[in-house]
Amino acid sequence: MTGLLDWIARAEIEDTGRGIHLADRDDWTLWSYPKLAGLTRTLAAGLRDRGVDPGDVVVIVARSGPGFVAAFFGALLAGATPAPVPPRAPFRTADTYDDHLAALLRLAQPAAVLTDADLLELLRPVVAAAAPCLSIDDLLAAPTSASVTVSAAAAKPPALLQFTSGSTGNPRGIRVPHDALAANIAAIRTWLHWRPEDACASWLPVHHDMGLIGCLLTPIVTGADLWLMPPEHFITRPERYLRCFGPGGARLTAMPTFGLSHILRRLRDQSFTAHLAATDLSGWRAAVIGAERVYPAVLDEFESALAPFGLRPGTLLPAYGLAEATLAATGVPLGRARREFRADPATLTVGEQVRAAPDGSRIAGCGAPLDDTRVTVTGADGRELPERHVGEIVVRGSAVAAGYVSAASTASTTRLDDGTLHTGDAGFIDGGELFVIGRLGDALKVRGRLVYAEDLEATLGAAGLPLARLAVALGSHHGNPTAVAVLEDATPQRAEASARILRAAAGGAEVIVVAAESGTIPRTTSGKPRRRALWQWFVFRQTAS
Image (cartoon, rainbow, N blue to C red; front, side):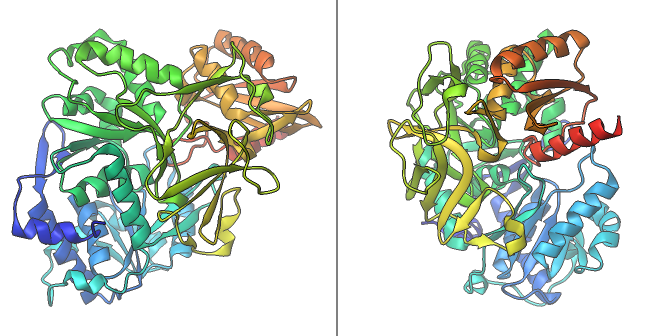
């Protein structure tokens, strides 16, 4: 198993010419691994000079780039535990972001907070009461007293304090040990046959588990080239991302389904496709699709739309994972056709057998467990269920996290219990492959059967509604089981059509469709709808009206 810091010594011995190609306005800047290794050592020494000791937590609030890499690995090299936190997003108000950051700092209890130079003054009023707020740029420019060697990390505190807001919005801090992080990176490399020659491209935020572990740490530890774009660049210029797999030579990537949907929307624009005219995507080997519900129709449409540019069938690999499993738990193997299961959502009752229906919804298979990972499905009594029976997905293995930073942070359907991860997700096993249905807490019993919010969203998506602009929340309203669909920027005609579709799919629940402004739907940092917060918004709206 490769150590998390071994790449530093390798880079100092041999310059392979590889590194991180960082997108700027119109070009890419290469930050070689030897240069990044030097920055990492400098930052580690700077942290030690400022009183950060082995075992301390260092919160990192920084954008994608060499500063983030130096801060993350520099904290590890100093023997500390890095804890990445997102900078404030453009659509988020200062007050709500400050409250969220303050809550994360209370959980982390950091010895220092590292940030980009231009964010320093914005963060100081919030951070000052918790820890010193230090500029990454200043630390890299300041003289240091001594070099820090890799052996300084021998105490091995947690390698990562990973925050997840979850669908409830309550921040949770997850302690990921060195061995768990190294094990998950090794399992991902084995799964994807990842070699130093296999370049990766990513637009995912580096504070999120998929962007951090799958698309930043894994290529760095492997010594592979990485083409790294800030998320906002991908939103405005996704064709630039796609060209990474042509002239850039990238072969591997990962993203949620909404990233595919965004590209598909842009592909309908002829001026967009003109940018790809000379791009050959035949070298693109794998795109891991996860972090949210995987929609088979979107996968099919994406591969069909990009087939004229050389994209091969089977490039998209659905996967399942979550932060408490470090990242990935299951994945479709390279070179194997995707599987799907057709079932009527109304028959998917916890503990009961899945009954197929010719006209049922399509559920994507998320592959078999990765190396040293065991995935089972259990009933309400905790016993393992047979194949094709729906229950709670349970994960065990070397990559399962050690626990939460405080008991107060475990108010969720996801639980870590002495090495066993009770995910709070509903699914079933078929032929050794995992099929995920949705969150157990995002289901509503209607006339004795469970209706899942994600299935209702999938039904609307199949009818042509953009999944990135809708969400369904379930609850009891005036004593009746109710499905509330919030549609952003929807026309009255689309809202009316959505109501008809949902009434047919909701199994007898009352259906309420709300047309709302863009940005109304609260989402996690990975783009998942925060359904409980959405339900609370709906109830407050009803009370106030």
